[in-house]
Every structure is written in structure tokens, then in C-alpha cells.
Length: 63
Image (cartoon, helix red, strand yellow):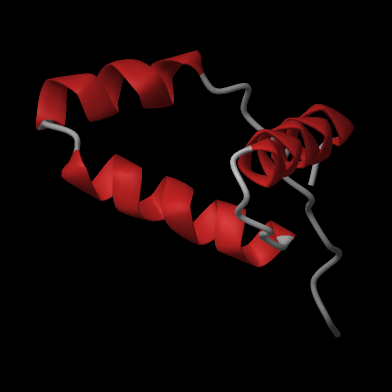
């Protein structure tokens, strides 16, 4: 996970805590998944297009 994403999760945890909801990282991610699932196709596509792509890690083929 990128550092910026970890910081975003922590900021969301703090926001939830201020509202009286203590959540762990996994719960924040799960809420995000449910929010994404509720988006229409066009909104999902637009949000996904804004996401910074992670570099692909390639491994050497096994011999």
C-alpha cells in the first residue's frame, strides 16, 4: 500500500472517531468497497481513472 493511501485511511479513521465510530483499517477499506459498489458505472470509471496506478512487479521465471 502506498503511503498516501495509508494516510488517507488514517484520516478517515480519525473522522469516524470524531463521530463516535471507532474503526480499524480493514473496516474503513470495507466501507470504501461498499461505497464504490453503490456508484454508477460512469462515476466508478471516473473515480478509477483518477487513481494512481501501482507499478507492476515482475519476477524472474522459475527454471
